Length: 211
Image: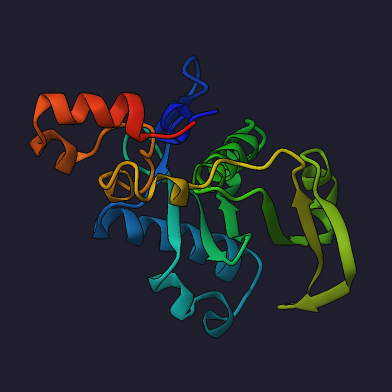
């Protein structure tokens, strides 16, 4: 399967017949603040987690996800960090008034899609013990022992997919503009590619992007 034809995890709309929700990668300071606000509401206020445990330097280096309703109100969030052959999913949070609508499933689908597009097929997270069954429904399995922080019980969980994803690095030497594409749009030509001649662009799209 060609990386060029992978489905892009761009902003998606869910539950169009009720409340509209857009899930997307944080692109600006306003969206970043909204993502942080959801975490403050869910973890600091609802679960009484101290600020020092909730926010850290990884917030400046991770991929931040935010979910917004049709009025731009922050609904949910998560973040992703990347290691060698492993994507770590963190800080999933949904405000209480928006739960029970399937948004957690949409959020996890969105996150996994981003990671797969980057070539990851192994995913790791810390699940609250009460939510273990949710992640098991996606193929995650418990590893190691239980642990606790902020007065909540957690368990390590891993999802290892047998089908390996195409690697973006495979495009090196074949299509130089591929790795310049925006974070969540590896299946579409990016801004720099539009500056290339039509003949060169067509060659890159048809031959440069390897299957």
